[in-house]
Length: 294
Image (cartoon, rainbow, N blue to C red; front, side, top):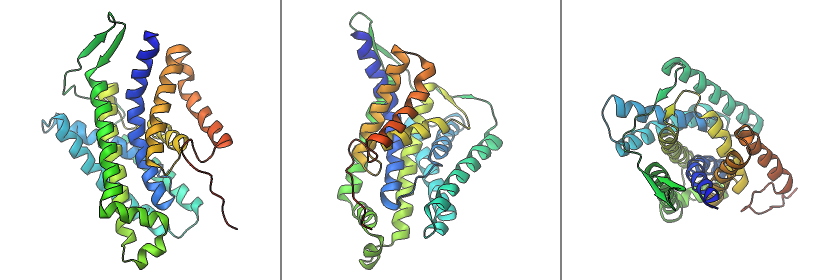
């Protein structure tokens, strides 16, 4: 029983990171129905921005997170304006191919700029271990930090979307872009803000991922980005609570497979879940089936 509880705690930590990344996916998709496959690479840029902020400028972890959020937000806005905006009235296939192209561009650009070596992420705070039940269950201060930051970011996002003018405009654009334009909403600016917020969440996830694994490298965003996409689909892409729930479920599932079965099946099992959810309930666990008028 104690091992089961330990795996749940480990899964919550990993799932928190997936949830943050999935929130970026689901925000962009909810507003413009675009899967930004460069999201994982934006995470990587945020992680490296935090790394250099700490190692070069001597910033603390919270200042490094803010710097990472700013860097990733600017990158997200640039990507939206340069790569996606000119294709807004094009077919979905063209946009999808462009998203994959941007992802590959950032991956190879990262390899050229940062090199191919793995870098140790600075241990800016002490990772204290708290033991319970005679040492059979361990909770680290990093796990507490990761979970706390994720919950706080989730609450901030919910406040922005539900209570602010920008959030209301985002919901209006998501519902009907043409009607939003008629009501005086600058749709282009709202989409850019959506990319900026989603990219900021990816940056936070990148910093937490660096702390969790103590390693960063230019291709670090590829697999977490794909898994977070699975989490977003699992919970119901386009739904903020769905991304949150999907991230936690995926993280717990992954640690259970690793702990009770084999680490070799950890990654394949994630994509098996994606196939099953698309077959059984394509709208996701929290999504609703919508009939399309023809």
